Amino acid sequence: MMKSIQLYFSRTALFAIASVLFMACSDDDAPTPPPPGGTDKPVLLVIDEESIDNNAPPNYFSATDINDHIAEVGNRTPLPFFQSNAGDTIQLFTGQVGDEGWFALKTIPNSWKSAGPGTNGAKNFWHAGEGLGTGDDPEILLDEIPDVTPLRATGLAMLKGQTVVAVIYDSDISINYGPLEGNLQGANLGIAAFTVLEVTKRTGGSDSDLPVVTIRMENVLPLSAKPFYLFSNAPVPLSSSEPEDIVPPANPGTPVLSAAP
Image (tube, rainbow, N blue to C red; front, side):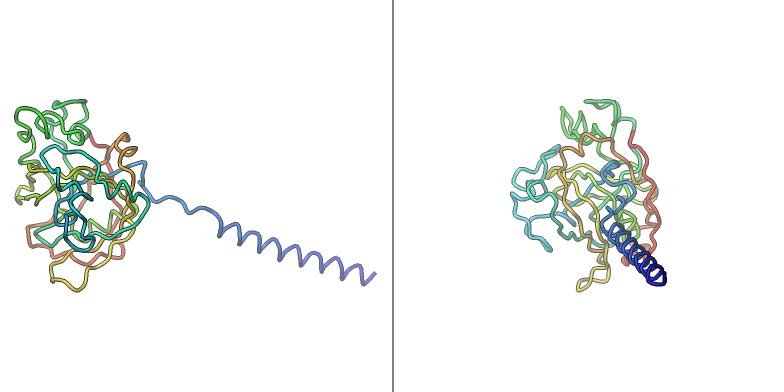
């Protein structure tokens, strides 16, 4: 009788241990939940040469890597390097305070909505509609755009985990403050998509350098067909020099993503 009891408890103990190990392994193997937003809510940005340029650190892209040899107003050709290396990770610089490289679009002008080829203003900009990159006066609707918001450390950090679709400019995007407006005229390299993985303080440069962003490059073509979203609560700088927001905060806050009209 005693041996039967001992055998029962031994088997029970072994079953309990096996169950714990199975649950532990199952938890380890379980897929990580996707971050908020992600590829289902691509965030529309514009990016200039402070972040993506040929023969410049940290990537030293060639001219053909990023369409520099065919840059022109309204070019919406996908950047070859991003397309060919979708799924790979690289780092991008993001400019300096007062000379930022990433910008959030927070307001879509009504003029963009009627520019065609469709009725969604953000998508009309993406497809370089009349006055948005094509037509008799291809840049007439691209100046004095309200709420084009330069992204400094806090805004960049808020995008961690988000997938971005971006129109890439061949030169600087100029910003006026009070009221905040951007000039989106100028030649374009094309379009690109990526997911923001990490945002870290840049070292070894100047005191005004903005963070280094680690991205995973994505195929922009399927993302182009999805509805776009605006980074509605991107922090608004007071001026070209204030705040000197160069260190990504540990808890930057959650981005508010609103459907782009």
